[in-house]
Image (cartoon, rainbow, N blue to C red; front, side):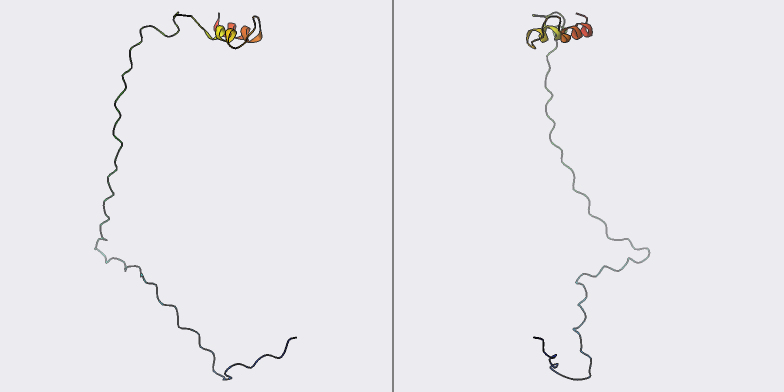
Length: 102
């Protein structure tokens, strides 16, 4: 059960003293510069380095225009019919013929 309060270690009428105030911070902000005096110069930023330039690739010139009646003359519609499984007269073939005029 709860008993009566214990008596303090020293029964005096003096107020208890607290601990000393905290020590000041280790780094105090520097005092403002005097009028007419320049603040210390800021160090120069490091120079940026760039990756070396890559040599330009040589592109051979075209001997003919792409799509200008080459070997197989494959166009989008014929590729869709051959490899896409488009049946003759299907909506895909009709749309492709209308779009490309073939």
